[in-house]
Length: 274
Image (tube, rainbow, N blue to C red):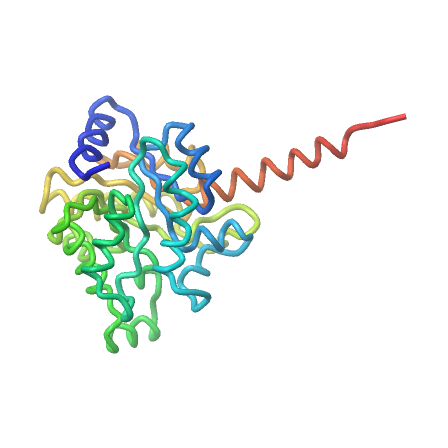
């Protein structure tokens, strides 16, 4: 699906008063089930491989594999099974071993409708983040990624972490902006430390307002931190203005899988026999 068609669908969804929902897919069955549930966007992150292997999503930021190659490998499982939903690639924009223009062309030829900046150094802070910025592995490269993707008519849906990044990504051509509230809470491998929903709503609103001042047509969603369940997303959308949906990865494949398999086994083990 091309960028124009995808955006038309998303804007039609918003105009009808329904939320835009994006879902991470670490497996083919996750993608198939998400599409059956009516998802608007499917995202292949390298973290999906680790998440569905029972490891925390932050594994995707560590040196456990070539993030961009992992997404290419995962796409062979996900792209053929998705019928009519735009699929985005999580791209590591700081990858020094890719000619990014060529890699984006390859992703488009494979059938990806767009990109998102993941793994992202936006999740890293402190001295380590400062050193990354000083040594050529900066968030600026992720902004460049979005600019290059937009030039190729790929749908762009970057994560942003503050007002300045929201402005920069919108100026670079972001179609969909996703204020990120940190690692998702809840479940067996979720974060324990996070913002409150009230704090998250305030931060999301600030980033949304900054973005639409640059481009009134940008679509703004929310993601992460305490926004783990449908009720949490409903809280954010009802306590903000102009935020029209939610991106979930752990929220839509890890948490439901943990609960469903656990309960299924509990039910099996409750069977009696004579």
